[in-house]
Length: 194
Ligand SMILES: CC(C)(COP(=O)(O)OP(=O)(O)OC[C@H]1O[C@@H](n2cnc3c(N)ncnc32)[C@H](O)[C@@H]1OP(=O)(O)O)[C@@H](O)C(=O)NCCC(=O)NCCS
Image (cartoon, rainbow, N blue to C red):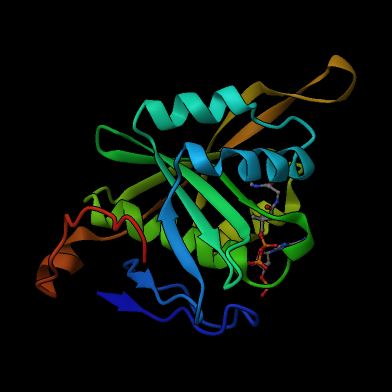
């Protein structure tokens, strides 16, 4: 089942209470991250973060069976990616990144909706993530998507000049009873590409 999230450039549509897979704009493609993607992924990662993941971090993540997702534009250029890790009854969003030159075009919202829908497909109704309190862009995105702050990890992240920054722990969950009431089919594995 899929549902449009509205025009990804306006970001105007409301977040659904139960996360259906959003419809991608024409020509855009979603795929599972593989070793072939890593040059482009690492290039974006290094430009997007003060303390980026290394290539080895991504390689280990793919090898460990984490769910890496890539979002490519109609020309095949990588626009963003996300990494999800299922843990028992939760899905951890380990990384979500949009190519810096494409920020504020609705792509982060689109990719986050894909991540939530992927958790839903895996029957994991809790999505958790960590974020720097200074990352106001990401915090605004997560809060708009219905995440709530459930904790703080002191000194979790490296910061400038050897200092440390806390992490906020955020969670988004949805009502699985509503799924049952609506007779939704769940548990479909994510597509290799869409
Ligand atoms: C966080 C990130 C993924 C957002 O991606 P994006 O494509 O720019 O976000 P969108 O255009 O989809 O914005 C969706 C909403 O997020 C919020 N938002 C995004 N960027 C923002 C900014 N710079 N300031 C304030 N709010 C912002 C807004 O609520 C926005 O909705 P609006 O445009 O209707 O106001 C992107 O900034 C990014 O890749 N940052 C670097 C990597 C990172 O920090 N990832 C998160 C790690 S926890």
